[in-house]
Length: 392
Ligand SMILES: *[C@@H]1O[C@H](CO)[C@@H](O)[C@H](O)[C@H]1NC(C)=O
Ligand SMILES: *[C@@H]1O[C@H](CO)[C@@H](O)[C@H](O)[C@H]1NC(C)=O
Ligand SMILES: *[C@@H]1O[C@H](CO)[C@@H](O)[C@H](O)[C@H]1NC(C)=O
Ligand SMILES: *[C@@H]1O[C@H](CO)[C@@H](O)[C@H](O)[C@H]1NC(C)=O
Ligand SMILES: *[C@@H]1O[C@H](CO)[C@@H](O)[C@H](O)[C@H]1NC(C)=O
Ligand SMILES: *[C@@H]1O[C@H](CO)[C@@H](O)[C@H](O)[C@H]1NC(C)=O
Ligand SMILES: *[C@@H]1O[C@H](CO)[C@@H](O)[C@H](O)[C@H]1NC(C)=O
Image 1 (cartoon, rainbow, N blue to C red):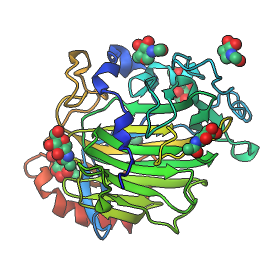
Image 2: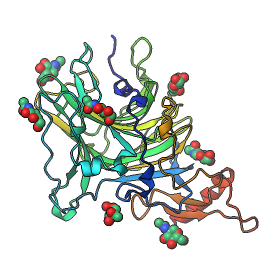
Image 3: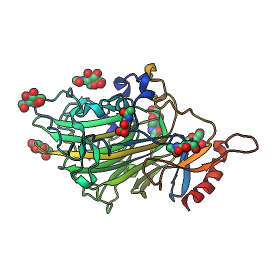
Image 4: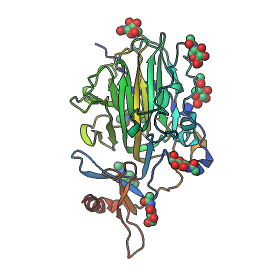
């Protein structure tokens, strides 16, 4: 039997088409609401690996926090904006909450997508990404009225309206990426959180609303071989997990030879098959095309992918726009504050910190004798000691 699972990447347009020039005044913009608090750190350490006990170091860190975006207190964002309607099949609708989701601070990091794909035999529902499916929502609990980013997909008469955002930093290699998220709504949708370069360099967390709420799909693409048959080792679908329709912390650790997936800081999948080798970007989407993988959503139904925060620590390789890019206008570091350093003087941890998103210093590696910081080469040893101290 020929399987018809599509790689998630099959529905991502060539990145070069979608790049926009960076705002030179970005550094002066107010990014505190969506960014990190780690000015003093020169590298970041986390524990990962087979035993989740191996320190790994990265040079960069980002934290996008969507929890505190209501300027008018509780109830400001409790009503979802109206759904896209039957005539809105061009992807040309404006984004809601443009003061946030079309701000300089947002646009420099994220691109909201508007591409579409036609119906085919295997994927029988036409799909159109619309910026109007990306918006801010708020918890109704007035005592804990946090906000969150929402990506919605809904089924119209003749098409599926979908949502996708892509991070503009497309030269990740490698990274640990996390999000606090849940998925709610009707069957027949797929929520994706993944690294992407192409259909063979892609590492996924996918939540299918057709699945039981204790099951998640963890895949390195390609999931199909040249004959279109499923590659068994590409994917792990553990069940008995904490339910994805409640808030959970999802995580992919991408290293040179290994992929690890965590849920609430517990390793739930690991793979060495087709670990991506090309610098990649981070993509988040919520979609359906009526196919075997996403399922078929009933007309009038919708589902939402809701995200409180996204955390990313990473190294880079090559230009910001990634290997496929070549758009010189964007050949600047997104976060110009910090230069790539040969040494790591101040090591910060990102997990087990007092305030999520605020890394904490675990060691300062500065040689009194020479006055210089220690090189990355010896960090492994220094780091192990420092982390142990830091956690006591
Ligand atoms: C920047 O954003 C933060 C967080 O939303 C806010 O507290 C602060 O007042 C803003 N600063 C300026 C200058 O607008
Ligand atoms: C950075 O270090 C300076 C000087 O030690 C300190 O005053 C400041 O609070 C630190 N900032 C953060 C965010 O840790
Ligand atoms: C990130 O880059 C630093 C500096 O080159 C290196 O020491 C470190 O091992 C890299 N981290 C990973 C996970 O590859
Ligand atoms: C769809 O929404 C647009 C924008 O709000 C509106 O102009 C149009 O009349 C609506 N179409 C239908 C069929 O409701
Ligand atoms: C889609 O987005 C691109 C980039 O932002 C924009 O240039 C284009 O006009 C948009 N297309 C539609 C149909 O709105
Ligand atoms: C990644 O892309 C490269 C270049 O197209 C290709 O050679 C390789 O097979 C792809 N997949 C992996 C896992 O490296
Ligand atoms: C998919 O859903 C549509 C709309 O509810 C329905 O008309 C169609 O028969 C469904 N197709 C399949 C293969 O279930």
